[in-house]
Image (cartoon, rainbow, N blue to C red; front, side, top):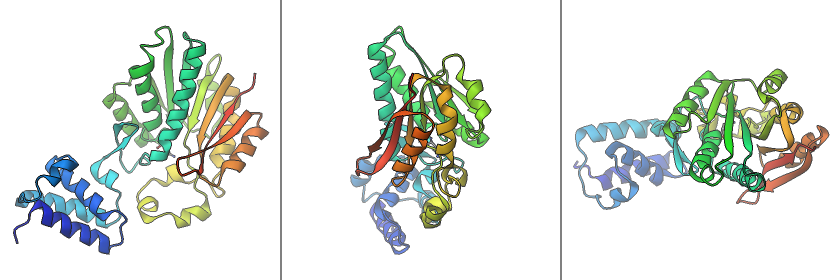
Length: 306
Ligand code: GLN
């Protein structure tokens, strides 16, 4: 058989489909692009191009991995987030589009603060940074859009993770996006109260952001196999009730937050009221549960009162 782009795509998309995968055609196209070094649109203008034996072999290997349920992002080793490509490995959670909303909300708050006080030294903590997607997106936006506008201001981002392997991925991402000097990575367990006191310095962080593990035992059982079998449990499991990290953050982060500083949390869509109550019980003020584009509760934001 003479394999062309078209026939290879059709065959592999059908094959993935019979295995029950959700977006077989898109996955097949993305993987073929990576073999050929093509952009998606180049596939469409080269449907009749034959695949040589080496290309077919490489493509077959990628499709084979996908058939085991391995997410496309791990196969490619990267994932787009907030307009940039981030390296990922099985040591880090794959960045999710909903988390872009968390970044947008933090950036809006930073910008609003600089508009009031243009010479502010802004300190941000990203607790549980994983691939670094949140911390790095914030730092990159600062460089691109805020640093020139607020020349008297400065930004410093602390990014914690308990996993040495995750930090290695995150550091590579910071290099890749030119923010290695703005983001300070540390191997830190956010469940340890001492690390907040040590890290906060004199006046504390202005903004604390976290997308912590928040899957409880019950939901864990129901996760799709692509997530459950391939993404790191350490990044997913929020202990039996899923709320463990919020409980600790609510308690430990407030004394480490500057006066009128804010915390931004990503949550599971059923956790809004519980997380709100936890924050309130630890003295956080103006706690609000914010929706995502699917109108599900997705972020909880709160203020450290004066
Ligand atoms: N902060 C990272 C992200 O949003 C990692 C989150 C996690 O591992 N729970 O993707």
